[in-house]
Length: 319
Image (tube, rainbow, N blue to C red; front, side, top):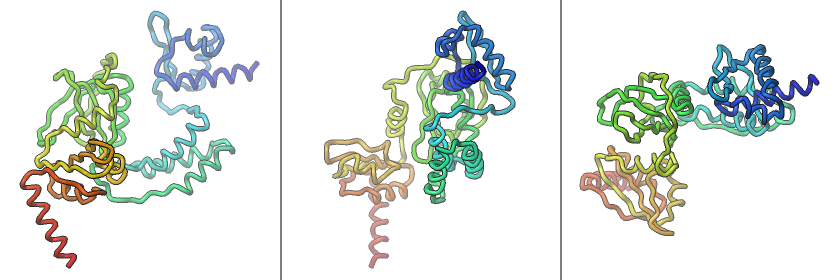
């Protein structure tokens, strides 16, 4: 009897951790018990220190809330191994997570079942990272967590945003998705003042304020956040124009130029268009130099002048 109750409470806790809110009747159905039994099990979880809130409404329900301490989490085998891998790579693109991630990994390994400990240990010993200097701005993990929570809860937030021109303004948005592109993170949100979808670089966001107002989630045109951001980024204005027609399949070019993934458009089976436009002439030269096949170039005069001067210096240095 006690074993059945313990197993049921663990199952209940697992369900509460997978969704933000659960109607009491649905929990009862999932656990094959009565609503009254669910209430008793919820009370037992509260006595054990789990902050379970009751949700008011027609049907009533429950949600696992934030507390003063982090309660134990229930992970299945695949989740535990996935977290071990993620912790080893958590430092990429985020500020100050290296030591924290290693401490968390050590704690995870300590409590892993024996059948998984060997896998996690093998991952820890086999995976290594090269500490390159960051290509772009580093993202504050605290900001990332704040925005991720706002996206999950569909809570309107306000923040100061510095545009590429250097001007700063207060924005009020409905956050929907976070999208990573190389070393940069973007917030995809619906701007309440402009009544339009906008993209914000996280390294340009400051002074985030939660309004406490929650709204229904919005349907993104096209439904794919990554594709939406990629298309908008490709269409963003730049100071210098440079578009290359590369004589190679788009997938081949993507495989050799990771940072260009959002700016490559296939023209056919063996040709693709690469938009290397940028505010920096030096970055344009670096991008074109990294293309893995021959190409023709359509570019502004100042771009062509810079490329010729760069090529002459390289040829001179090469003798």
